[in-house]
Length: 190
Image (cartoon, rainbow, N blue to C red; front, top):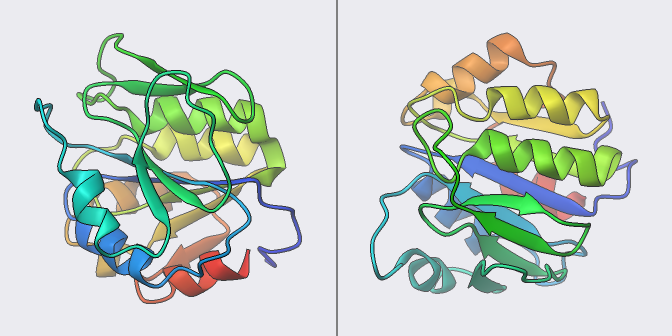
């Protein structure tokens, strides 16, 4: 399926165990003029100081920003959902943070953000699921598909922890199985 026929307004990427290396390689190789925001939902431990945005910024030509409540997403920037919060969309630009109960043992939950984004963006959303050790994200990808969005899944053979992408491949109607090497080029083409 041609992935660049739809006008992409948001790329949301979910990952857990084993996804950080893929994300670092991805952001290193992104074009500097992408026309949409990229939102990262990564399972990580809650701690008082978040080092992830600082770490990723070292690799990225784009600004890497940890999401704050009621922030407005801007094109050509990478956003990271903070540890211990779910991210929900208020509208196509504004997001809010929520500390309700964990889903799939996770907060942030990939499913929660994928579903909220799917409701807001419909066919202009690309949802990508990477390496991970639980099934968080699978239901969210199904929801993205139901709302006519585009679904990419990391090839389980290339995932450090293949549980999450394998469950997605088995349970979701996807548009693309993608390797970490192909991911930046595919996003740059959107």
